[in-house]
Image 1 (spheres, helix red, strand yellow):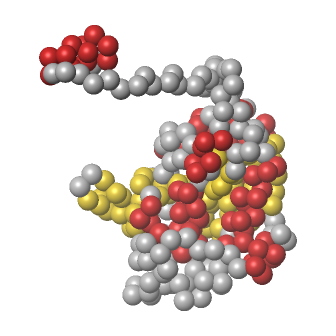
Image 2 (cartoon, one colour):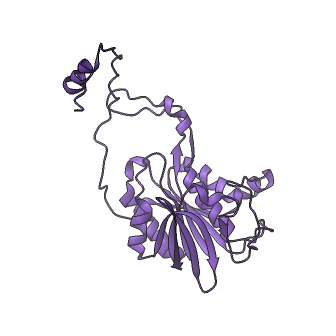
Image 3 (spheres, one colour):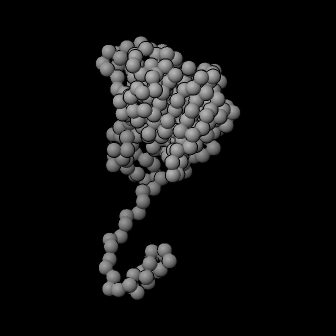
Length: 273
């Protein structure tokens, strides 16, 4: 099985206090970046689907990772290569050049060239939280898709059994490959993903895997192709940020003497009634 995994470099939510809004722009000086967590889960899913769980160092398929970003985003790709991905592609672009529509069209071009059996993405990126690229990409490729996947199991005959997280439980779908799946947190549980080569009773470690030092060094020699954004899409920005402003400071709380005064303030000041 050949799997294409889309990764995004996002600002670390734990360092959000470093973001400043001086005037009408965002100052990200000192901000640290990491792989979007849901995309990490997508990569772990791809690795499990292309191996026998008992021999994870032997890849039984091909995993190609792709990201859209500046030179610094190659750290994200090298990390993925160290954990087991075979090849990487970086599309050169700055965040200000991108929106969900452009990203979807760029990934569609890469997918048309690579012809993967399966495309995996995280259900959403934790910076924009828009949850739209996967759906748009599936539409552009005319692929069957499953969103918010909690479980995946490879079946014979080019089928994939996917358990989707929905309100009140799990909805099970059977997809015919090629297909696209966006994954949720539970997909990295110990018994959530199985390739046809992994015994049903096998249990993975919870969460994503981490690369040992020899694999990190070996990843430096794995192929990493760089493409200009204009080579994969000519779509203009459909959305753009006009200006930024910090939220107004909240007023200090006040005590009210009775319910009547509380209702009056809710109506006249808070305007919630």
